[in-house]
Length: 199
Image (cartoon, rainbow, N blue to C red; front, side, top):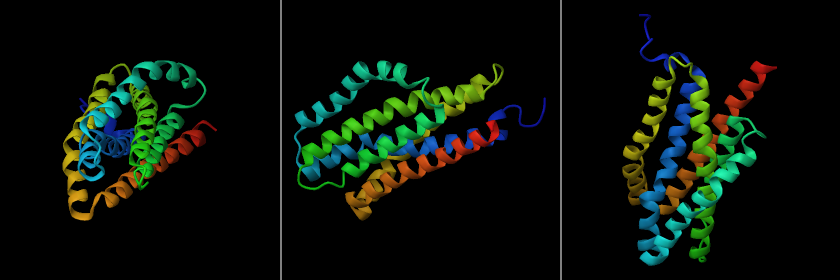
């Protein structure tokens, strides 16, 4: 057995960078289930019914829109372009949290944009990881890709609450917006490298 054959993706620089950027966006996205509801309830004063309705809207949009949206765009753009677009949408979602005063409107805008980002980024991220693998290494690649989300479940809640507790929620939104756009810029660099390789 060749050295490193147990972890073939470690020699795939594009995949490792892609995985790192996906971890960044996943940590940002997972705030939806941890710090976001806390902020809406404790700092904004939205009641639990409204918060529940906003969270339900996320699920309803996925059920109603995701499959038609994927069908519409999957053959029109490259995987990396779509992944980057999803990251930009999530960045715009966190920018909406900078809004003051009209918090219900800001929360609604956040849910719409973060859900659009989720619907575009994660399915095509999964496809991109699958495309990087050979039939023999597919399980290992997808296992590594799954670990990204497991890691984000562990990292996101304590990181988000620590930033909010230490520096305030305003600082958290800035950090999360930056994470999204840095990840998008990273994916853009991979997209440029892919174009150069093809050209």
